[in-house]
Length: 222
Image (cartoon, rainbow, N blue to C red; front, top):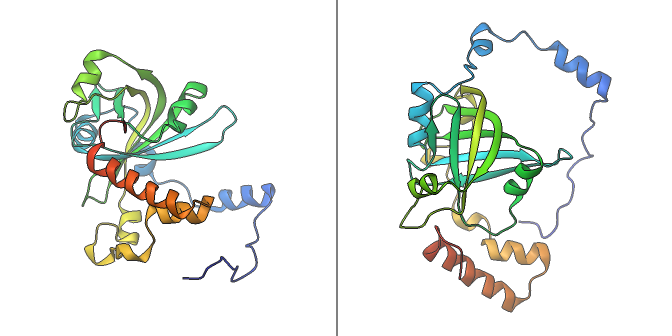
């Protein structure tokens, strides 16, 4: 692996606004099935998928439109569906950057993609979100006796199944495509290179990260 990133070619050319609009206009018409698949509600199939999903990605943006996507993972059953128009996901302990929560306070629009390991189709939900500390909801999301501090409650605007092409192209679930973990340094070592940690600070980070993985998946580090 090279020590520094050396461009292998010139920076790619990009289209101006007029050319970009012309390119988009040149695509074929949306198919009738693709146009109709957004049912704008959670039906029995979407509900079942969400309720057994252990992983979703949450896309938000701040008041200026600066975007963020964060992964959320939990035991199946942690993501909740309330009727046809409401979905809730727990906010578990993390690094306290709070990118998602800060964005939602400023801009409630949110996009979710739910995944099931081994299944190539996904579920997409878009809507608006508010934060909740409802005791009954948080208790229903407890894992190993640990309740989340809050939950993200989404009012559904769009909801639909997404086809398998991305997963088939990437072979995401194919064991043969898995990389050896040694292909990349540890998280602490990459952070060392990125932000200039000392050797001692890197070792401390290694220990803290491993402890968080081992002991505090459901609660903040003490």
